[in-house]
Image (cartoon, rainbow, N blue to C red):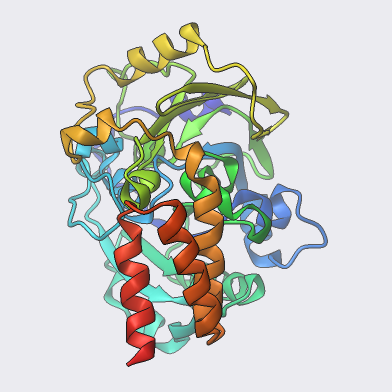
Length: 377
């Protein structure tokens, strides 16, 4: 399959084929039947996987939606584009888009807001559009089955108007398992390992690629399928960079940076830790050793030239708090949020008091106090 991709990397004067990219936030790879979750609630998405290639070890560039969206558009990693913390940021598409000969047309909606008739009439789906990116928000209260139905309708409508097109389905970031809420501040498969499917352009069907790749490289891969020439691009290092700044934003902890390779994942905050891979999954558990000089040097080499400090204040990198030391706090915040959703204000107040006592200087406390105050008024 890799040779198939490279064989299509040739210049062409003909117009690029039309392409559809469906992007879903908060979707882990292991939630889909195509990635082994059986019985499946996602038969429509699984059918898209059967039409082409399923990448079994695709990873987001960040655990935060905003930075991962910017990476997907630009083809750059967070230290390169400088969007490090959660929040919207206006970012242009990278050079890969023009290199392929496309003009991007974006559609945004949540699963609960999807309207088939409106989508059919959308300018990005019209016969004149040749590259549409559909950004789907998996909003609260919608099920996997709801999402699957919407994705299936989007693909069907596009296919009815654009024959012989390229298609892709990708997760923006993963989602937390309710039993692993502490993963919010870590670098685990919960938030990093996402689905990535590509079909069309005469490629193999029901194919699988197990190489470690970043979703930030999707644009370039699609451009290659469209006939763009990327022969001058550097070869892959076999390591995929990603980061989490959630611990810094919430607790003032040092940002986590790291990489995933075939054998596992190296994560570095105040300390460095290695988590081994078992098949396609990186098993996250605490290793009593924290010295991995070889992996630390590999991360340093991978990060060189990225502008590590871009987008964050200098003090972020001198914090003595390791995010893994705030896992308990992350779990308490998840319980606070659940209590607020259920209207249990008393329970939320008790959790807030505990957080104030145990983690008094955490920036996130201002947000929690405001929420409690708003409910009390």
